[in-house]
Image (cartoon, rainbow, N blue to C red):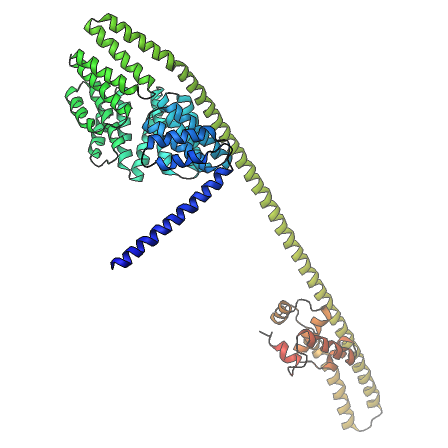
Length: 562
């Protein structure tokens, strides 16, 4: 690429970045102007130092938040609070300060109705309360966050909630529940293909198994986690795994494995709690080897490391170990001083009270879940009952509609039958009149025949009379059937399907026309004048859209014949 073109592209990219930065700054200033007490200068100092000097940036962030109205529902304030909370949690291990700022971001997310970030803040609060040893609060927050992650199928964050619950229940000595949550954590990590989490879950379960004196199971879990450890790239999780393994080896008396693992974990130490646990385990290892002076020095380093953060319970544990070391050395004054420090830490932490609060919260959550389950069951019953009632109403409507259609069909059939009966009666009357005329004609011919002297003529007249009588008897029903329309025929059903608005008289006229009857014949059958029949035919042509066409009614109606 030519140098000129490359320089031009770089210049355009720089201008675009500057334009975007200026736009972002304008938007930020607009947001800050709406927050009471927000100092734009301090906020800009915080932004400028984030990359170069994070510690100084956090000082400016805290100064900015201290003067700004953090009750304002602004995502910008929540983001600064979260960053400050992360700083105190991860970089300084000052969990109470992290909780202070995390609680503010949580309140903002609640005001905004941002349920996802609200759940994330609750999970992080549970993690910070766990580190601080306030397990009852940790249980409250992690349960609330987990409910949201379950509903939204947020597997990644849900797995982390499982781990928090496992740690909380393990610390509070509810080992069955701790094992359940550690197992869920491991299974979730296995399904997600996350080796780091899987190793940590197996390792936590191993520690729990050793605590319950299930040595065989613990060793199996350690071997499995050790086999997978080579694929772990998460330094923090790997460090926890190794430190757990050191504790397990110390509990089982395998001092050589403990020493080897301590050497492995040393380059991975980053956080104060990791360093403190390292020196604590080193002190226990040296104490087991009889090197008491070195053990006491290692415990001193552990206490110093824990002292940089809020690790009261861990410091207390170290003083308990120191008291035993000094007692073994015969340094009872130092042992007494370590014991005093131990009880001072005990008073500060009050673990018994924390456990009581934890059990109280646990019972409240269990009752709340039971009430929620009962409410869901009641809602399900109401829903099913509503569905049942709606289904019944729907069925009744269908039955009513079917009954109504059936009633209308019966009425139509009754009208058709009545019309058919009317035709039959008319034809009977017509045939009766023809019969009378035939009888009268036959009688007159008979009388006439009596006065005729020619024998041949008389025979012919007698034959005519017999033919008249015979014709009357044979054709009586045949003629009637011919002129009575078949209202249940295929023709009739097809016609009514296309033209359901035809009146009874119009339907009757169509049936007669379909039999190719003339206007005169129809007039004789229906006892209507030819003029009336012609008017009815004209109306039919209009209904059939035949007006102005050459197609006859008979041709049109023949289309409906089978």
